[in-house]
Length: 132
Image (tube, rainbow, N blue to C red):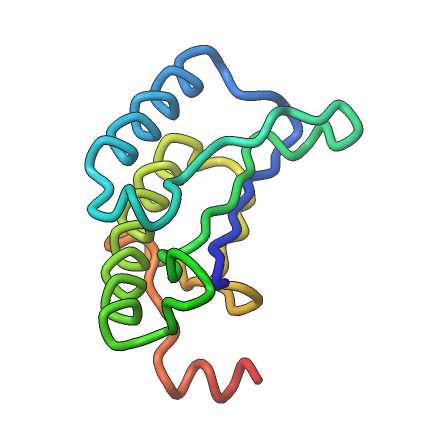
């Protein structure tokens, strides 16, 4: 299964206002997710006192076959692609709530690119070749 991972780090915790905005974004993301029967939506992991600078983190799996007999097919790939772009949009919204944090967001081990004006995006082929 393919997952998106994300976390925000800074030297002080989330404010109440930030947490309220995050809660609203996560709720709207869940309400608008086009494939609720085939996966999960963005979430927020519990704050870990052992990692005090990690103020926000989570992961989400892209839609997957319902059972072992449901192979990866064009329909699943299309759902994964749609879900990927759906989640990129919502991750952008989350990052904008905590702009002063140091963010990491990736599809498995491939980092998303941050553009201040447009938000997160995937690497171009050229960027990916340089990345590897």
